[in-house]
Image (tube, rainbow, N blue to C red; front, side, top):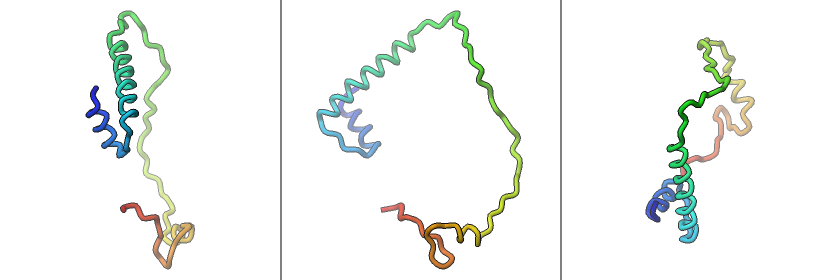
Length: 91
């Protein structure tokens, strides 16, 4: 792992990192990836998995819901006339 990889990840996460923290993260990533390599090389022949997990499937059932427009507007905390006011999301 190189500094450009950390800078790319920081760019994707939209965070600014000082140079010393980038170097520290390189060491951390190398340790994590080294541990993953150890796990990949583990010999699990003859090991039986024991767990009680199961898929909890259910049929989709259509249910009637009470979505009354006036009731929703009445319960909304910030409104003006028949409009619901929300916080601005985009800059």
